[in-house]
Image (cartoon, rainbow, N blue to C red; front, side):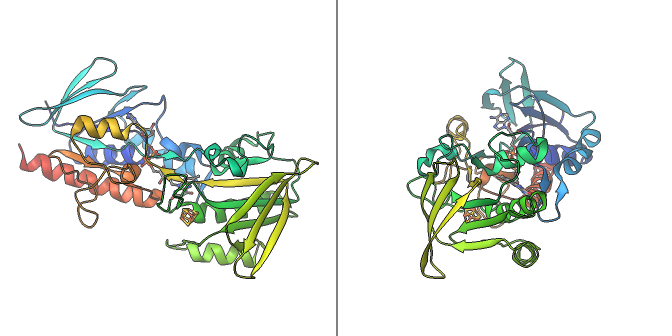
Length: 338
Ligand SMILES: Cc1cc2nc3c(=O)[nH]c(=O)nc-3n(C[C@H](O)[C@H](O)[C@H](O)COP(=O)(O)OP(=O)(O)OC[C@H]3O[C@@H](n4cnc5c(N)ncnc54)[C@H](O)[C@@H]3O)c2cc1C
Ligand code: SF4
């Protein structure tokens, strides 16, 4: 069986795990359902907190994954336990015997149209955080006006929301909103920019500096309070009503563009995969780690490991750190189970 290690998912988590396993002398095989590697990061433009282009993070993998078997447009058909390791059959019919399997299947973006009250897919100038990244990459999206005078961001769309079926915080969208608000000010210096938030969760290194910079250097307005109504005006603008809970008064602004900060939710396939593998899921549908203190990258099933956002929302540096840790756990597991 050589030292085959099957990695399901070729986002940043899967690629980093493969890079490390290759360096450790094992034989990683990446199975990616899409026709390109990179996962969500390949859709982003610049990454917080340093604003480095996503491409600069992704490009070096091309060299470091040289020699690694990469199966694009492929999924898992079945996985069965062997006496030692796992037998994996792919959607192409090909079969591999593997010493271990690493799940790096990532996340799905909350579908903003489910929050009908915010008008995504209904009003002309309502887009998501992901659409805005695409606009930064291509400058093509007719929903983004040429010279917007006012732009708003609504935080926590599909996160911390019982009605949306997701009570968890998505962790990355407060800082993404601040990053995107600054980028909008850079593109349209005359625009007024508003962020409507419930709480600001700026836990990471340099995140607080970013928030201060957004207010001090770019004059971005932060309004604490839930948005109560979004509607379209007769001239095609977007009107947002909210309660400013800090000032204790209602606010009403008219915008040329409204950006919804869609949250990070679990992949739909998790349920089927977990069932097939007899692995538990967490209440939020992400894969459940053996524990969340010192075994985040380990499943409660021998020879199965996790890397990245398949266990919950994470930033890119957290995902990379976890992928490295997963690779080391796999290496030790293989060494101890010859
Ligand atoms: C709008 C937005 C902006 C962000 N910006 C930043 C930023 O600026 N800086 C930062 O640090 N973080 C940012 N993040 C977080 C970042 O996107 C994640 O940390 C990163 O994508 C996690 O990588 P991953 O490999 O775990 O998951 P993913 O990127 O989701 O990759 C998972 C891969 O697995 C594949 N896959 C899934 N299921 C299967 C299957 N069954 N079989 C085969 N393949 C499968 C998918 O096709 C995908 O290629 C942002 C997140 C959002 C939502
Ligand atoms: S990170 Fe911020 S915007 Fe995202 S769910 Fe948490 S509190 Fe809401």
